[in-house]
Image (tube, rainbow, N blue to C red):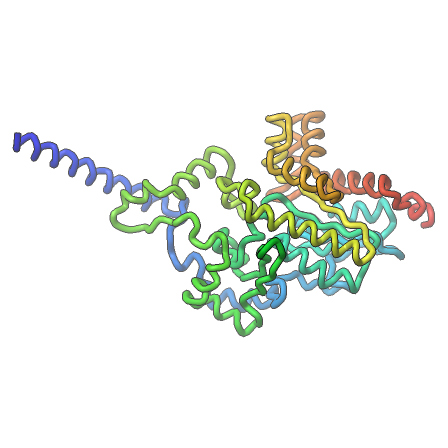
Length: 385
């Protein structure tokens, strides 16, 4: 009996040792494919500070600082009147295309009016709203649009971007809104000046601002160390392996595809409150507000495969309808073109990560239709020139 027990203990120990050695070897070889808890993931190096100074904005976190009349993205051609201002992230800014290939440029050519592009790469919806509040009263237009991709809900609850996406090249803090008793409350950018950028090198400061960040070690990152076998029990490791290699690639605009914040009350209510505040403020300033839900590649593919919009998009549209918020979603438009022209159309609609000039033309065409539907006499403006 004792011999059997000893043999059993030996076998269990041998299996655990073997699994520990295999785990050590595997995670050593493929270390860079997973995210481990490491303060270096978040701490900013001294060499980054000088780079960050060029984009740093004490109010918004970062900005583009274009040398244009209003700080908007440059336009290859300008017109005598301004029709529309647009605020949002890189999909509104139209990353990866030239200044005359944005959907704003195409829309300007159709209406013979200036369509201002105040989009900023990496912005969350709260930052876009703040820029609207800062810029629009000084440079008002008849129409103002808030553009976003549905992933932006993840940024709305983020304070320090590396907490959301450790591999990001945009290693700065940002302001964020919170809901308190149903009202929006702004938590200012924790870094208030260029000289304070050096605080991003301080682990204590980074941990302190983590208290306001939804993503601060939310996934309980595993530690790369003995016993290595415990890494196998960490949910983050399996999520990264499954979503990164099986479902969809992890990227800068979707680093946590396993998290669906549109199903969670707190972030969803925050986004809806931001939408409503934007519409309220825009109407108060005498403008016609518009919400633009710009299409991500995976959403278009899902719409084609399943035959209906993803649940989170339906949730947004239902809220907009209930609150009488004018909203255009472009997933259906892109999916319709894919269904009519074939799967290869997806490569015409997108570049590496953002929308192509071809896709931007489709966006401009749909917004032009909306403008006509709502009585903006773009035909008359066109004929005057």
